[in-house]
Image 1 (spheres, rainbow, N blue to C red):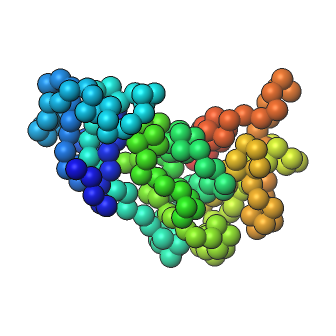
Image 2 (cartoon, rainbow, N blue to C red):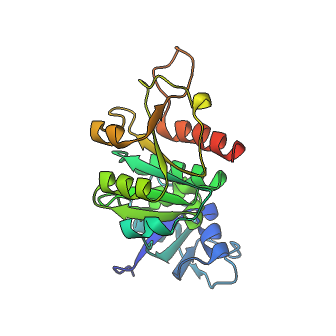
Length: 233
């Protein structure tokens, strides 16, 4: 039922958004009941056990709906030059948690960030990621690169200012003057942004918060930053 060009996703919001925006092909829809608002596409009624078997994880909440969808198409490093003015780009460094990436994608869509740069090793086409993103995958262009530092150099060559988030930064986000083309680099909670990437950036900032916690989850941090950019665009 699955081949190299398609993969399964689950969850009502995820599938409804994919069907609504028609950015990719949908090969099959499985449902445990009729009339699940599948945008006119034919559903195949199945026993819940069949959908459970597809995802093979009792903790995954598929809500009785699964769809076999076309895999994500990626832009490349060379496509950075085509990103228009008044654009914000997000670059993920060493963030491997699929659910966190899904939440960041959702935050990107919520605050009009259309481009996300990821490392080649990251598998975007995961039902966990798509469920966490809740359909926001259809509003973001993914740029997959083998070397993040090369991507940063390409961004800077094309007029982007590159900002790294760091707990050790001297400036707070409110002190940063963002321009018309910004790249925000987010690192993992444990490791942060790698040293070479930090050195290649134009500036660094931190999010001010209570001393009761050491750090925020990276997806929560991203929401604060993206909202700041959105309000000041």
